Length: 471
Image (cartoon, rainbow, N blue to C red; front, top):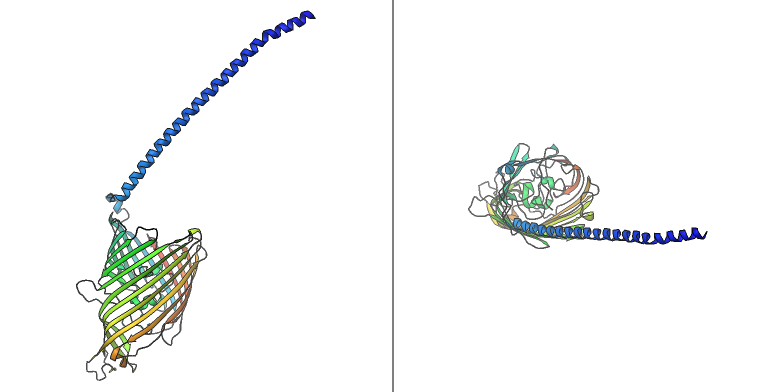
């Protein structure tokens, strides 16, 4: 037994140095692996830092290039690119069914008949029953990198007229914009919007008495706009033109017969709300502007106006959309107020030879007098889109015939003091932004002694390329 124990002890003593050697080798291997991993990570970190530095340099160069591109004139586009979709063409089909009273001389009591005899050819007093109302054919194109052009033809029954034909600058810079040709004036809020962009089937009463048959003022001339480089939206516009449309007349003279100026402000209130407000001024002159009146005996009489018309318009719009997204729900509150003065001379005559108070002897004589009026009016409307397809709206119009001084002709012509009004409710359904159907009811008291309950069913269909509408 002693021999066996001695042998075991000898074996242990022999193994101990071998175990220590094995442990030293394993530790050395682990240290080598740690060192290798550390060096590898240091190399990778250095590579990432190098890539980051290169990326920062590239971003700085891209930003500098973007600034140069933004401030430099736009490069000339290849001919093929300029003519690929030149011009863009769109067609607006707009028709309706209207149920209303049969009134031969439909007009607005207390205001100068804007179309001479009646309002029968404007967008608020169309034919009864079915009609194609007012359709448009629009051509729009970039002329070159510096100019854009537009031609809008209005089509109604068998008549075609040039509603707009203008060119517009694209690259003046400094917030400046220039437009020339025939265009809808920038005065007011609704004036420069086409009928298919209206929220109701007809225009407010104030636009009908101010501008006549098309319920908007169209200018042949030039327009200059400037948008201020500020957080608050500020736009200033100046216009000069021929002034041949109502309330002016075509005098076939050199220079400008009409001028307009306006300023608009706007901004956002939080994410969901935005607003726009404006103040506009329009001055026109007229020579032999004709209208039909009644004399004090109820006979037909003609009036010719020579003088100046000055119009002020204040407008305000508030829009709300949850989270700033109007696709599903939105609400728009819109209102405008006008004040108009006219001063000049009024010539009363008996053009139809009925022996009226202006020329009872039918001798060809006329009665000339002073003409001085001050009139006003407003409308307020709200439109709520409660689903992506459905909207409903309510509008109220109110006018005031105000002061009407006909001078000595006040003894010859019937001068009515009246406050026309109208209440309108509508609902429309849009399958898309290109197709809409609208049902509208209005209680119209714009003619003294007449209450006209009007029902309108309207369709608006857009074909082809069509740009977004303004705010």
